[in-house]
Length: 76
Length: 217
Image 1 (tube, helix red, strand yellow):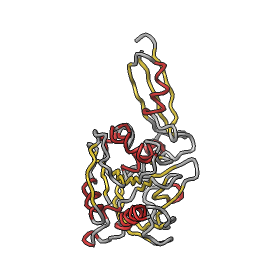
Image 2: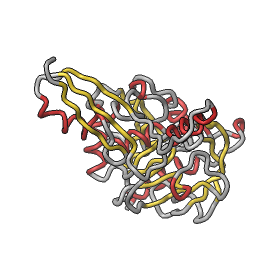
Image 3: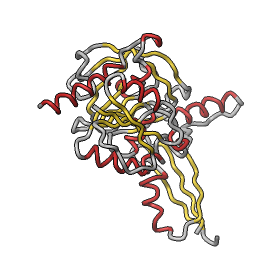
Image 4: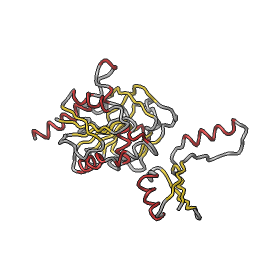
């Protein structure tokens, strides 16, 4: 099973990377952009996808400061 | 007294920590792959980039074999000091509350900062006075302390000195039991007049005094 894990800074925690990107976009002429957040994408092949939540809790994300989302891809 | 300084692949401040500890006692290096703490009285988890700091600072190092021993040692009341990357490792390992996030500036900061001793009644600060200022360097990119819960603050950056955006100017915290302490600044780099300040030595002297008290109690 191919899976993607999306890791994001938790809401309410200052995200200076997102802010830097948000400030850069208008400088290039892109307007109307707000709430930019920068996270991490982890792609993996996994035999037993039921283990994914525990992998996220214990290693892939730091649940204290990050939210994670598991996206399983079918047919791979 | 005998200090043990952990060396991970990617540690870079372990020798300074070792030399700082040797100014007040004996000190040995503890290899990351070993399960042996060599009967030390206190463990120092030093600065650097343990296991490359891949994924998140300290995230991989917490699973090092030696960290199982450090966690057992801490749970048994053993004294553990985490400096910079060591602080990050102890937070990732759940031995200290909170997490270290990228500096608000997103930049590497490397400068001397003034710290205020908030709690001088800990095994790590008993050689200080409450409210005393210590001049100690910081050097990090991921030092913004955050905790969703109230924490036991031991050191703060003095007003206007916060180098990284840490919540409430927090520079160092200890666990509820008071035997595990982590800080982003580097006391081991402030032990010789040659580098401008010897204030960092007080952290090591405090540990020495704590252990001596235990022995003589």
